[in-house]
Image 1 (cartoon, rainbow over the protein chains, first blue to last red):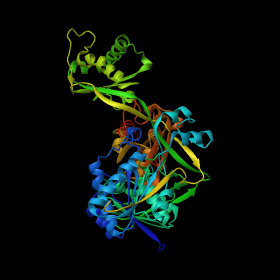
Image 2 (image 1 turned 30 degrees about the vertical axis):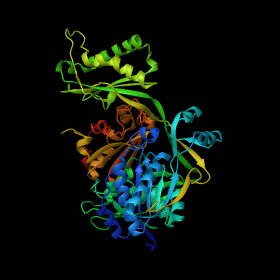
Image 3 (image 1 turned 90 degrees about the vertical axis):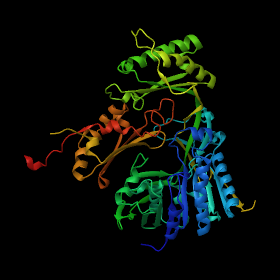
Image 4 (image 1 turned 60 degrees about the horizontal axis):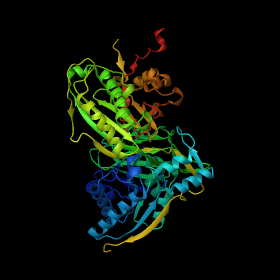
Length: 458
Length: 113
């Protein structure tokens, strides 16, 4: 054991999910040195990066940010929020910074704010591509310049380095653009000079808050990290951090359960040993960090794939449900014919799809099948180069969704539409198009930090 | 002898995205015996997993984790997360195909002969 350690509160998996003042107070009573929380993820899809708009509502984000900012100021400890605004675009950082300034005025608190931006211009990425500094990650192929040109937004995933630098410069609140889930805890602990093996493993363990405990929706955890290992303390009485729950989190949302790549190297947990200190607290030792020969920054980019319109209809008629495959096939054939004749569009000029919820909508072609269901919700989706065309296709589909009989039926059935109008315009539909890295000489070189003194009164 | 599926043998079978381009399946077993039993079954055969998920066996990575009595299986997502053809944004329901695999009874130790 060593005398040097750092204690960090990680109250929740995502800022805006509902942090409680009680658990923060509990963590501070345990001697917390900092509060860290993640503000985003790619897990809800490409829309948030593509549009630069957050998934979380302003109200819930402000509520949670107020809780950690007030607790942090009272205790005199820094607060780090990574991947602001769900995707970490510059607009996401600005959005959270504005809310922080508002809270400062309302609560009468002062602090030094660091904003770390991670959005990259297309020109920056094209330059790196031309210089041979871009590599593909499996399963992507080599990056094409046209793919970069198509991106609405591109962000680089920062590691700990810019966060460590901002804390060293005296920031009380650090708001970052896109960062790896582990960057906040690592940024705090590596800045204290603690060994990287325990730091990165601790960071990965607590990145979803209570998920590494027996109560995944509990009030978060406090992690204490030193040079030999780390210890996880749950912050709610209902939760226990057991060797099993702590070790299991290494598997979560991670393709390889032992190895985790960060910008400067790879965490290897294959030799880690998990020991229960008591019924609720677990200690981990033996994790190793292997520095990489070349530091790399992973990229995320989202491009518009088209504009989408959807309609939802319910089918309850058991005669139709008994022959769903035939009905769906007839629909698809009839739709293609009508879109061609009514709108003059060929197959490759648009996308249209039926998803029969209750029948095979989730697994699609992988569905092993079964009995006819009691009812089926048929979601129709059309995507085209512009919104008007997508809606026109949905309008061509409308009479089929309302009335399409099975072959041989001598009457027109009418199905159960969910909404009026039936067409719901979804706007731009984005896709993730980058799975690549940029080689860098310095882990901080793609990121920009701006400091600001925020005062209670303007 | 009663037939059992992975779902019946395991404590938990779950699926999730590992980023927008990878899908990962986690299997947690209750004891050493069931862990060994699943390790000897089709569940960890990349060819079986590839057939089930209509992907290439070469892309399937299987990680036995004896200390946790867990098995992890990962492969590139057949369709990119959130693209037009994606039916499961978080890959949250993709475990059911693996969970339905039949797991044979453990073969008794060599003393049986």
